Length: 433
Image (cartoon, rainbow, N blue to C red; front, side):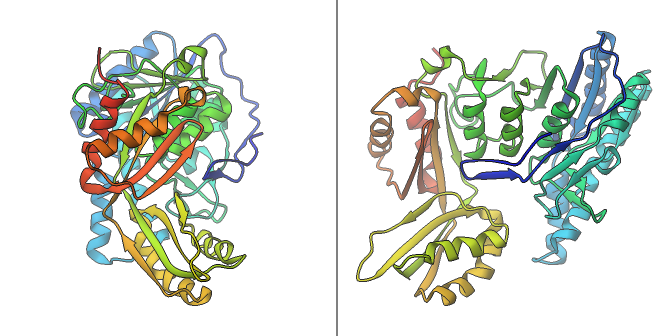
């Protein structure tokens, strides 16, 4: 049984029960879970290529369960359609809309496998018993019943499951948040006790920085769960942070690789001693955050608790928090939220400002959060000074700072984000040798 847990600011699962399953899978065959992202199934040619890859695994004797995202940019296109109707669609109806993309993918992939003689069957998330809480657009998984998946595996079929989606206790369709197919894959791999979970994307693994920004970024052959969790939460667009929480907790073997080549990718594993010798493993920039500043907040006990309790009640994720030194009984309180949730935050902030008798609120969506991550930071001093020096050398001002054992994050002006990543990557010697 998986129980509730939290890690830092992430409280992803209240509980995730893995149903006890009595159906027996042939233990003579290794079980592999594969997840294919939107770029891997962007069109029918790509879908056929994925089907051929899956067929090779079947011929090698594997049992295969496949998790599929929506085709290409389908989810964004569906969100754009919703935006053409209303700028404030209900979360329930959004889930009804954006969950349809994965249903197209799984059906087409099953057809492609049938075409080449591989027995396969496709399911939606609800059909395989992915039960979530009642939160729409970023639901938490509560339970997965693997009976139906195991029954089909025993029939020799490739089982294809729509990622990103589930169903709550009211039989309403829910979605797991952007990148939720990663979470589906890791949770199902955990439930089935899979030998390996492969995450296929459009890059060949995890890099020291975004190779589109840093030309000499280096692919990592191995990275720890801790580091990957931090990188994912800080803007690296490789794995969903919530999926890494589950992978770390249950030691799911993960292999991040490209669906466009046969090259080995990056293995995500427990921390090993060799990793500690590397000071910094990666640099990220997250341009999808906004800063909210509540001005002239009365400086007395309980005010911060009231503010963030009200924010949490509206399911808004808060990241970095800074409170200025009190002046004459008042202080400014700043925090960051995802840009996607800024409008929701604005809707409620005026009420919060009135309730705590603050003077006003200011918003800034022209920020970026640049971060360095590495387990080696635990045992090395001077890392922060080196980071701040590298930014200062490029005349980049720091607005907010946040640290943990294995990461340092700075909020800066968005226009300098790429310059900051390049400077930090060079300062810590992360380029190809």
